[in-house]
Length: 305
Image 1 (cartoon, one colour):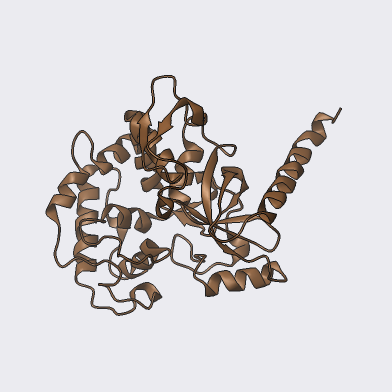
Image 2: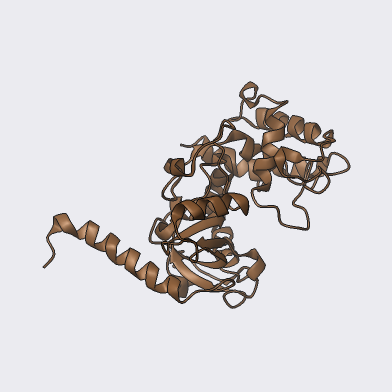
């Protein structure tokens, strides 16, 4: 029998061995099942308010919770669930399609030289899964292998390649550069800094901009770098609908007036990054819908903490 004092280190070793064995069978484009605890972050900050929206929506609208789980697994949405369905028991609900059918909607990882998995897309969604009831580090998700770095000789070479390939964001919540050694080692909101600019960029989507046709990794962070130059979010009350509405309005107008051909150092123009031609009032109004607005859900959850 294994002594209790050795049980946790032993289980951690088993998890690592299991991860390494599984990694050996994978290649770029493969879909694999992982637990959230196996994933290593590649950015130091998230927009807490984006995660709060998801958690608030999950509480008020169970269908949305199962929809999001199905979508993350490439299964479009949920087709059947009931009051006995549990997010951590896949057999208790049914999704519209088979796993991986909507592969482009799935979150991505890369494999490091040590065989471990680094998350390159999905930090907000997976943190919501971590924080939700019946979530946590043992919660299982499907992910797509976007790149395999196992041929590199060292982890130092790995991080150099990650920076070159744009697969990591090494700036903190105040816009200062960090080293990869300062990244969180695990998901879980408490491990991340809260970037208010990243949150407001999420809510300004479909108001002043939207995701462009071609994927730009860390898109909202590039926008945030530009917005920091002209807007001080500390001036806004981000716990009230009035304050949040004004912040989204001002940020959207600010980015609509940008003429840069290198947004946040991305090498892309404002138009290429999704800038709208004009302010979308309908998009703003929808955010604050009294029953199902994203900001409404978020503020209700945030102010209940």
